[in-house]
Length: 283
Image (tube, helix red, strand yellow):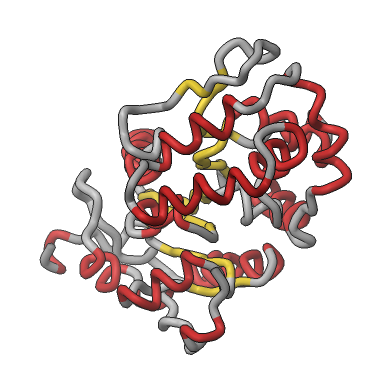
């Protein structure tokens, strides 16, 4: 898109999306449940090898993993409370988003009832209720064995890139005439790869698969160790926006901007690729 098609008087509405497992919580909720109360870690790891080899889809192995749970829905959360670790900076970051009216949403390949109950447990139901969760569902929570209800027909069961783009379209329709959405995505792993390409500003947890993917494909991103790092960078973006007079350039088209267009429109906020060497990255 040429500069003449851009509106220099537009301002940005910052909308934040985050993965859940490995991002907001340092462990994976599904792994904690099935390792302790389902098929066990050894069998789960065999399923993951089948996915990595390409012999089965993420959706296929997840069906096996979840169906190994034959406990009532609420029975596993005492183990979750003892095992899970909430990112040390998350609550402060979420409070910051609320104070500044930055919508905060979770996009996950997990099961929404599990994620919701976990947030209720760690944040309290009132605070957790302010977070929108876009994830797969669970058929008749409380029934056994557990059976996922997938959001779509993709191999992953939830096309996160589609969810990000649908959210962008919705945000565009709801923005004030002088606003356009700036989509921020925060993630860590394999299930975030597609969504990573759709964000305007991307944060990847340092040393994990999403960062490795960004390095391999030359995708601009900012590494983070905790949500305190993310908060600091979002503050910079917001403060710079407030200092600018007349707003910043942005797209007026409804189509999702290409990476090149994003770079042209928001050059100040696309971090240079991390200098972390690939050899330092963990599986």
